Image 1 (cartoon, protein in one colour):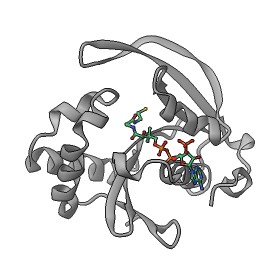
Image 2 (tube, helix red, strand yellow):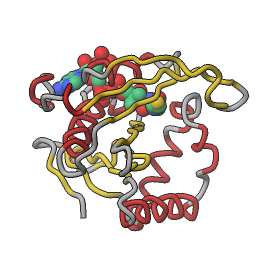
Image 3 (cartoon, helix red, strand yellow):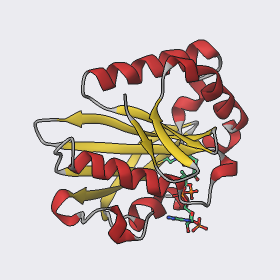
Image 4 (tube, helix red, strand yellow):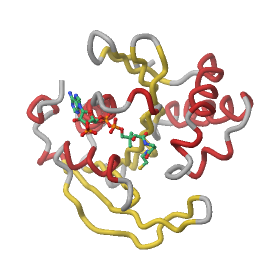
Length: 187
Ligand SMILES: CC(C)(COP(=O)(O)OP(=O)(O)OC[C@H]1O[C@@H](n2cnc3c(N)ncnc32)[C@H](O)[C@@H]1OP(=O)(O)O)[C@@H](O)C(=O)NCCC(=O)NCCS
């Protein structure tokens, strides 16, 4: 199983079925915070939904096709970072993330993404990592920018969230441009 001690207060682990209750609580207490950006949030309404979601991500992990990593800060589930897929042929993946409101502003997502980028270019031997953010989501866009991803372009009206069609800004990072997370001052 995937487990990583990020720092004294924070560890990363695969989401498992036993985390379904606290995942649901985290989503429920942060629904207003997450809904403007993440369309799937409206589909998670009970523990069966969160179990089904976790089961899907464990299957992805077993297939070598992605994973959902829980971020645990001082024992509490603070958020989740996903590898959405692993394309072995083109050696690329895509990262997504969310954080409970109260845990923002400490670099938890930036640091976790840096570790997953290390993992993607290291153990998984991939060549490209992509992050897509809604163009209006300035907090989210700051993360790939902070990690040295290149802004590659805008996909117009790429995703329907609620009743709003969002443009997506695509950020990409190539293995040969990544010198490791320490060089970006992320600890
Ligand atoms: C997008 C989201 C994950 C960003 O959260 P965040 O807390 O801003 O991101 P991080 O955890 O990386 O923290 C960065 C902040 O911590 C600060 N920080 C502190 N220590 C840091 C460290 N060691 N490394 C990096 N940043 C650090 C940064 O300066 C930054 O602060 P600022 O916002 O005042 O500039 C969060 O707002 C969220 O979940 N939003 C709703 C869901 C969403 O939009 N998901 C993304 C969809 S594409």
